[in-house]
Length: 176
Image (cartoon, rainbow, N blue to C red; front, top):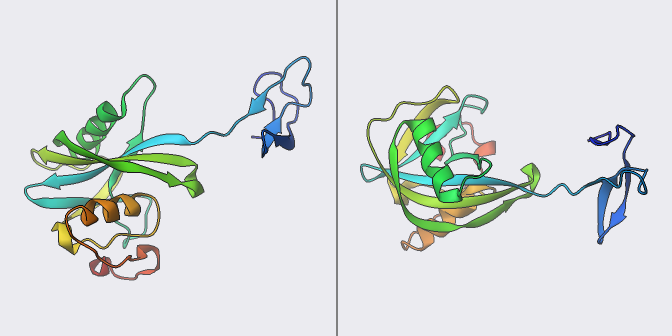
């Protein structure tokens, strides 16, 4: 953000409440502060017919598969949001089994709210997704960022302790 969304003046950078923040230079008349708070995102470990569904977004390289995720909408509870996302992305009806946890994803300035979902129906991918794969819970290797930590915690509750895998450096989707 370069300009104040309230008055249009160019923002300045300075410390407030112990953090660097963007401010409107006209503090007396405008007073705008860009707090840059994290964006809430919901994520699902989707269990379908006894296997976990990992999907590949159309914008990702061929080796990247991850959980179903989406932005929480205004006025929506996280539980509603993740059920909506599973329906939108996979055309599956879902039921929440458990809250897996909350995870920071600093690179994207997001707070991930992850759930384990049992889903029913026939998979039909949204236009955002180009592929998916089905894996047994013990076949998934968690990845070191974002939703990968949720996978690791979910597996640990089930006695599965797989080594972390950085799929961003892999050349083969089967390595995942």
